[in-house]
Every structure is written in structure tokens, then in C-alpha cells.
Amino acid sequence: MPIDVVWGTGSGRTELGAFDAALSDANVHNYNLVELSSIVPEGATVERVGALDSGRWTTGDLVAVVLASRTSSTPGERVAAGLGWALAEEGGVFVENDAPTAAACERLLDANLADARSIRDWHWTGESERQVVEGVVGDAGAGAAVVAAVFHPISGGYRDDNR
Image (cartoon, rainbow, N blue to C red):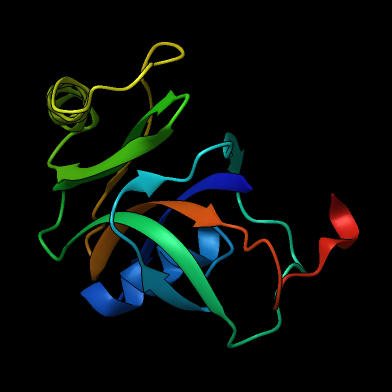
């Protein structure tokens, strides 16, 4: 099962508008996102893609994600969101965090990944990874940052034309 990591930032007149714009930047704005907890299935692959390829799903489809986001309506404030992940023979874990800066978000991700790895007696296959995005709220409105791990289903609702 492929899992694509996508991210974006956005601005809008409201925090919800900014969040929608950040989802648009990641190209996941036209789907009904179903948030998952943070377990990676055995045998899955994780790839950073930036923005989701168009045409994988139909507008309005249910799309499973692990999602990190942060919004603000304070001009000049930074917004950062990130996902970290670690893979093992048995599967893996995602952790999601948000913070006022990318550096603070990275520190939280590192700590949470270390904790997640320590409570699982799994055969880890490499170093932990992370993807963080940061934006700044403009003077007229709100800003948002999002990072999502998009799970591609094995069957049903997924068009495998592009893989």
C-alpha cells in the first residue's frame, strides 16, 4: 500500500478559509478526509510527494489520512504542522504535531517518535523521518499549514491509472 505525504500552506479571510487553501495547496481539498490514528500497515511504503496527483479519486470521495494542521488569525504569527514516521517489519507509526515554528514542531515530532518507537517491540528498519511545513499569517486574514499522509486503499474507490 502506498502512502503519500503531502503538505501545503494557505491564507484566507478566516481560519477555515486558510485551512481550505492549505488543503488546496496539497491538492486534497476536494475530498472528504477521514482521519486515521497513526499506525502504518505492514508492507506499506511512505513517499513525500508534496501535492497529491490529480485524478486518483473522484470529487467527494472518502480519503483516509493522518493529518497535522495549525491555523491562526494573528497577523505575523507563524504556523507550522508536521508528520513524523518510522517503519518496521511489523508496520510503522506516524506522529502528528503542530507548533508556532518549524523548529518547535520538529522537536515535538522527534520526541513523540522516540516515545512511539520505545513502547513497541518491533524490528525498526531505519531512521525516523519527518515532513514539516511553516507559513506566516498575513495582515488581512488568517493562515494555515497542513501535512497529511494519504493512504491509498488496496481496492475500491481508487483508480490505479498512475501507478
